[in-house]
Image (cartoon, rainbow, N blue to C red):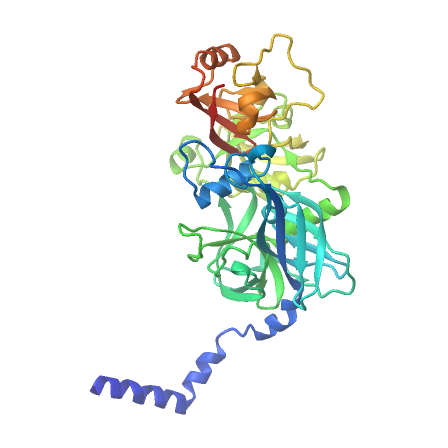
Length: 472
């Protein structure tokens, strides 16, 4: 009782002496930011026309997270998957929500590629409740940036800031539509800069503890000056909700992508053709280095710009085109932002000695191991009993799989096509065994009794998934 009375007395004394107001004065005020920048943030509603399936894959229960994985992979068979066969069931419309922000008063809007990539219709709602159908100008999956356009004039637009001036610990705020709740503001601090995430080699993410939830994707991240410094893109979560680990694409990266999409309709990136790894203390010692700064070249593709420029496995890249390479994750970002066909200075350590090379940067190949639309089937190719016509991978195609064995799908019909396997996919395995050759795979397939379901491991772009196929 006495302790409670003392606590109350201290609070009253603090307010009387003006301590509480002084503490409040040190806290950030986001009210002006919300008033000025809120109108430039939009709600994006995505509509997809889908077809209801009866049941899904054999023995596979419905799971929301698995559903999303199937959706991204583009395999039919689960309820509502794009590309499902016509006979599966009645059509219906599926809707999802995201956020975006206006970057020009004539209607150009930035958002995430994953927000609009599967859309049949994109509807943009402004803060004044006006709604517009949007056109997708272009999307880049590597950086998860998309540019869309609505037909309107004199729109409110955001102010673009400089993410390089951000400091860890600095206050930032997000505005978006979490769970469809339009123009919701959340705030936090910058937790880290230039964060490299697995499979995300071309974005130095801004990490924050701002509460970001489903529906915030594509919305802006502001500094206290009311300038956009990033696009909210990803969260780390075991539950699907915010746990204080949010990642934003720096706005300078996004603007560069949007300018290319607007001007060229596609993205071009520089390419060296090297595989790299992080330098550990032990590796640095073995190379006679005093620190672990740099990107260690572990391998070089044949006939690549790196090979032609004189780079070798075991070289450590310290500077590229004037930019210092602190860690291996710095190199893909710097190389990717370099214009193809540009000759640049590359400073390396080789066998303990410094060396400078001039390397002509190439243009990055596409992610997918695609078979040309005009390519003819090899004369010796034969369709197996699940409807796949396959070819062995060329050395260049194998290099894209980092040495893994695989078989390129030249044509897909019958049971394989019904399960979602398509031309250009790569078959990595059957049940628990890896693929070795077309002959070996077809021999295994043709020995499977009719009516039995097999599991085929398929790779498409960066995704791999076992696809169950019933042999007919």
